[in-house]
Image (cartoon, rainbow, N blue to C red; front, side):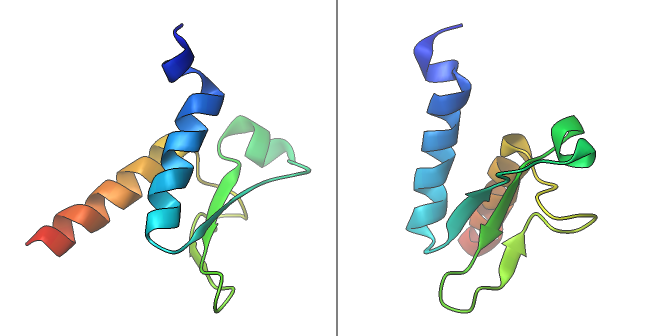
Length: 80
């Protein structure tokens, strides 16, 4: 695996996309069984502290692929 495909590199790239929207990407500090199986991230609006994405079934349910797809879907709807 190359460095740019490492988990840390992917996380940094997605974090930059999230920050451009004015949100924070939060990572579970003490993951439970569900988070370890899938997920570990949430997006939060820093002004209202509202969770934007990643708490549908349980807190921190989104993984990096989910967040990337969510951001891409927002870009597609705003581009139309």
